[in-house]
Image (tube, rainbow over all chains, first blue to last red; front, side, top):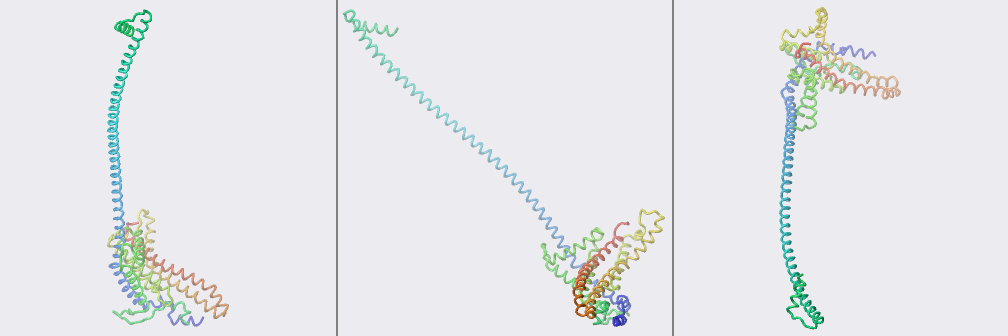
Length: 176
Length: 253
């Protein structure tokens, strides 16, 4: 393409080399100026800010983790305390229960003893009544036996024995 | 039409204001303008990002922190603790090159990093800094970087000149890499884009169809690649700055 070659010639061919003499100093100068501005802004303003933010975050994370660890230790401790309290309460409850049981046992045995004594006294009274009744009955029996003996002797002998004799005879027979 | 077809025109520097200091022509050019724009963009972004610093960052602050972490990570990995004072420098270098490369991705914007004067000076500055810091930190011991330890004396006769040559070629390769990448990529874009009107003029409707179907996807792909290169070259420059600084900061290898 003819026009392009002409363009090349008029434009100076390969600008990075062909314009080096004309604009090299200008490029380096402006590079130094702009780069210096960038460097000082970055080094003195922006990077310290960013670094500080990053370090602050790391610090905050470390602090939070440490706090969480401390809290976890605390929680463990309170769990232990709580467990100890539960154990104490359980022992207390066991004590109270056994005391109550002992009391109840004592009461029960006292009541049982009282009832037994009462029963025994009633038994004794009953026995006394029985023996009294028996003696009464026995006296009745000897009266009947005396009558029967007197009647039997009257019929056999025809003579009526005296009451005293009959009594003696019956008493001796029953006593034997 | 001439601007549209000449792939070299985009690299042309034009004078805007005259400025002459001490016999040097330091005129304000389109190149200077876009350097100023780039620096203002970076400063503007950082000012926005750091305007409301909080423990729980907003999006812009988070971006700035990721950016800082990225650069600080490179410096920490390569230079370890002694590299800490150089984080702002590496950060600025990366920012300056990255924003210049990104500005270059816009049509009719000037790519300041596509000129060897700019990239070459940056490279010379970096290597000069390495030498200065090296002499400050190690004195004449700095020359030990040319004499690898544990190498037999006979081999040293060969290795030392190689090391010296490799050291001297660093500013050239460092400056040339960035400049050539930006220039080459933009030329490629322009040439590929030029295919479309050329085809249309030469073949009419079929040419337009071919341009649209074949060339356009290519341009889209190359553009995406150029965005990658824009980032990558800034990263490589920052990374190599750290690696070279290690000669001055680290123990002798």
